[in-house]
Image (tube, rainbow, N blue to C red; front, side, top):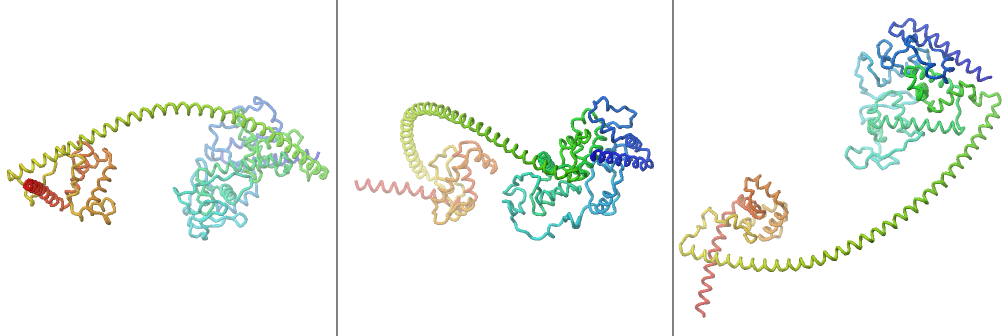
Length: 557
């Protein structure tokens, strides 16, 4: 009986509020006539009685004053008005008006939709730090130098405060919970005051908190709200939390707002009406974190007259309190029993998985053994083929050595004959001539002397230092050998690119291109011509000494 009186008082208060709204809205422009007619036609008792009716009974005709969803406006004075909250109904709420007056000058929430721009007398950018409130205050500023110096490490984590983009230690996963820490509390407070995702991420990073990407702020807020509502569901289901009178009032107000918005699309809104109820309850009171299922159950119980009133308002609160405690203990036993059954089922499933895993491992071992035997047989055949190929390679190497020695002997004989002819005809190159006679490119072999060997020791060391080699304690032959070893690391593509860059011919083998590169590098030093001339004089003197030795041996004989 007490609950029915309470419910009747709630209905009467809402009806009086709607009538006052109609009186106030009578002075508004004609552009809001549709919404005034909508507010006049609202009957809270009718909405309660029509919860279980079919969709056909609640179908709205064209003359009922409802606006189509595609044409619902955004602003009362414009053609795009859409209901954003309970304040859009025009109901008087002196407490919210006083709170909004205190924080309106301090915070400016981010607007959504195509709203008109306001005339500003100053820059909208926040240039200086300012406190929001002593009770829930936090300071926002653009200058990080004003913050006190803190440690470079974040306590309880492995990250650094000053980690920049591209450095090590990436952002770690932070679990979402209904119990908010400092960072999550700051994130939720800033979102309640209308700050953007970028501003929230910058503030957290500036405060030394978790470095979130601005694109993940909205997702985390949604997950936190879901976790909070899930926690409240658990508390309600297990009896640790109950609906209070204020919650019931918020529920009824939120349901009225949700019912107004969902009347535009009845067929589609039936499935998620109480989602809007939960959303409006959170908008009306951010601490009212009830899910859609909880709101639906409570509303149906209220409308059917089966809802339990709060314990403190019951005629016998001690009995209700004892029943509630007994219910909590009973639910705890049920949870323990379900957990034991779940653990037993998981143990059975894990055992089956382990058996299947062992059987699979046995089959894998058998398959691996068969493959190993097959590969061993193939390896034996390949070893026999490799032995035969090794014998052929040894024979080819011996033949190559013999042919190389014969070719070198023929070249030496030809060189001696050419030297004798040049000596007889008197056509000897002058030691001071700048024209250098070097072997033709087609005659370049592995035995052809490196052109860089004609350089002086000073120029050769300078060339090696330019290539990044160590020259301390090395003679001329060692330096030339280091250069040749370094040239062996170049492939044909690299040699082609370098020859083309230096304007050299790119035809021929790798040996010829390396010889061209070495020749071009040696000619860039002044000691090259002198070294070549000196080498030719020494080669001419060697045949003469050889002939003198032959003559001496002939005379002795």
